[in-house]
Length: 415
Image 1: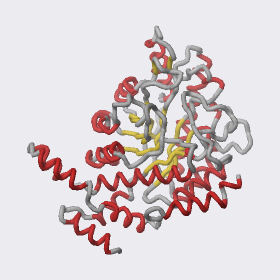
Image 2 (image 1 turned 45 degrees about the horizontal axis):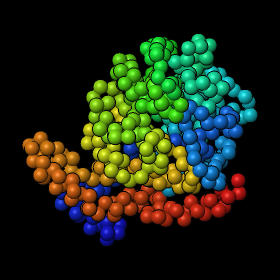
Image 3 (image 1 turned 90 degrees about the horizontal axis):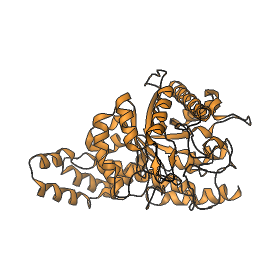
Image 4 (image 1 turned 120 degrees about the vertical axis):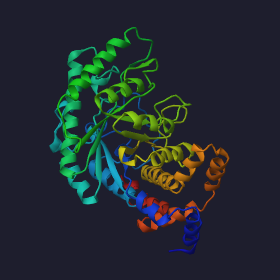
């Protein structure tokens, strides 16, 4: 234990905070790392296909994963540089079909057996997503709300299959899977029948969720969006739509940091969702002017998100996932920077005297509340973070960057 950490430990102890205990608690909070950062959301169904659904990955940094072995190796490298409990978040297009052509409405649990075996070896949990984009039958921008019944049926079948796969994974791992439903459906110009489209969407979800699945294995989560490229005038699956459906049918709400108006922050929405929904799934991202999915940085909003999670006392009801994809920088570095920052924010939030701050607030002592909040911004948090990393046997400071650069030279540059 370094002298720097010993001094930090004493300073935090003067405020009644046990830094050793905080580290132990934070290391148990899992963060779900999105597989699609490693290959620019291409997947293995058709890696040469076109990315659609209002999703854009910009940049052409060399070394993207091109097959399942490369993606797993890259993910393992990233995980080795990140402290705390981790999960991997899979989209359906990352199936292991072993060369077989499998339509999305025909995917089966067997196509994810190798992922399960791999996750067991690394002690990783898995989360899941049906993939309702980048497909010929989503080309016109509609899936589960499509007016063509045959096309809508295809996507319903895909989501049912995905839900069964998620439950299978959860049972095999003995670890609950959070399955997120997001669709790109919407109108570029002003529609005249929003009601009809949303009625079809309700009917689709009613069919998808008709079969009971034990929540011990799978939890369904629903993700809204304010708008998308090609759906600027109306998003069928809006946040209002999903908030109402999820509360009525006891589903999780998914809040994505980039899926609201620029002045809206999901940190303000966390408490509301937790009061009414059975749980919350987060897609922590960094929007820059729109849903641009920049790498998560240690900014005010990330800290506010972590503070809301910790202060709510409902950590067990919040499933933290990341959602960014930057192809302009080293993709493994993007994983490491973003995930370490999420872990860092959780630690930062946990190192605050929440009970004391709440006491100031309830008694109207806003002066002390502000004074404490400002004082804690300059306490020796970095020393506690370094101690956390040391205990997890991952690099402190920027030492991880040397390992990423070496991996790039030895592995990525040869792809």
